[in-house]
Length: 430
Image 1 (cartoon, helix red, strand yellow):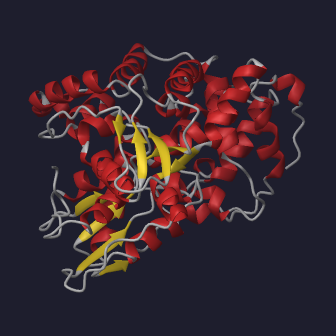
Image 2 (image 1 turned 180 degrees about the horizontal axis):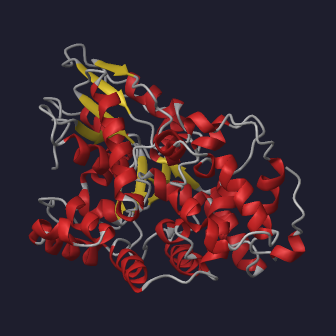
């Protein structure tokens, strides 16, 4: 699909959009793996359909407003990238396009208010904790509000774990073999601080010193993926200053955060060359906790008397599709004594969380969430393991009405549990 768009016309900030458009040969291999095509069934809600619409819009043949609904429907899960035989980097198109079109977009007051609420609460743990507590009180009003605000109330957790303040340094246990910095995350700090607690314990036992930079903040992924690139760059730049240079890696325990940070080269395209280089350098040091543990040779303790447990692994989209990490979590889980790993059907289909998607598009998100829960439950597994806080909460939420709700944990919690005697309860929030 050759394009008449020139990089010069797009400008340096959006020049990356040209290559994915030209690389797409319209073959359709992406269709079966696209969650919106699978649920909506029309071509314009497929990756190749959206690529065609974006091409026509960038060439001036379509009004951006006319394709906004189809672009908004995209979860940005990047399953299309995994299935594409032509190597189309859809992620280098959808996020920059959203940033480009957002500058031209006229949103309603309600839309502006909803986006403002998302951007000013979720990336800020203290605000998010307060907002979650307030939302729980007003849950009964969810059905009376506009969909987005109603979804915020509906998805609010019934209870929150106690606040946990992380130290700035956690020394290695025994001989030190490495030194890393941990991204503590935003929503995860509030909803499940146990994940980073488990990650720190596992890393320390492996001889890795862990730093948790005090002045770090949101990675900017939420803003980046809804087209608010300026706000995303501000958040990212804060972390450039907060994270030390003398660490082996920057560890993420949330697939969405890790993926977003690895996209900093695209986010800062067209910016000052010095900060672009800094962004690329930062991105090159980012690694998911499971990939890092696999690289350093994580080995759980031998335990011939380990209680058997069956675990279904759910591939978080921004781990499997965006970061191409599928084997490391499975390899780690299979190393745990007594653990049997099960694979659900439709692993490639998104669960519907996708950052703020389950708030902005609650109906589609519910359809996908229930579909994912059905496939996971069909494995008969006792526990579901995943690598992203959004997936974890989405699957928990949509399984709560089942006779036996799914127990969902982060992969690193099961690795941590292998060291506990007796075995850590998989759903423990301690």
